[in-house]
Amino acid sequence: MGTYSPLTNVIHGKDLILFDGVCNLCNGTVNFVLDRDHVKRFVFGSLQSEKSKEILLSYNYDPEALNSIVVITKSGKLMDKSDAALHIARQLPGGWKLLYIFKILPRFIRDAVYDLIAANRYKWFGRQDACRMPNPELKQRFLDAY
Image (tube, rainbow, N blue to C red; front, side, top):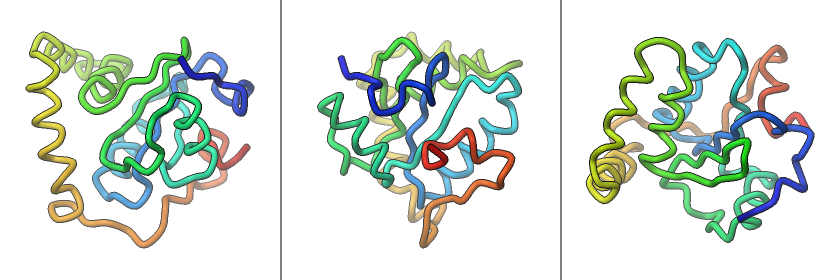
């Protein structure tokens, strides 16, 4: 299991979502979570940032693998692909928790669907030239603020 040493104060008591910062689908997902995460369960970081790469290396996870959303839970567990997406949905208020029922499907099936979307995300949703820059109010919820 990895360690939080570079970010202990930032993510203490929160789940960390690492996402492809130039992917429109990924940025849309972050906006979706931010709009619904009123109790601030999550902090965010782009997979392209040095801090995110450092964290991923501490988990022996390839920091150049930009094809998955990654969640590191407040307890220190790293999840990626469909496990990460379902974990996020389960933490959101309202009916989004119901998506967690897809956890009953074998992971290889869930991840195959995830991989199909991830492989085509730039073609289907586009990409940006730079990572998202949060407004000052949201900046404290992103790793780059620390």
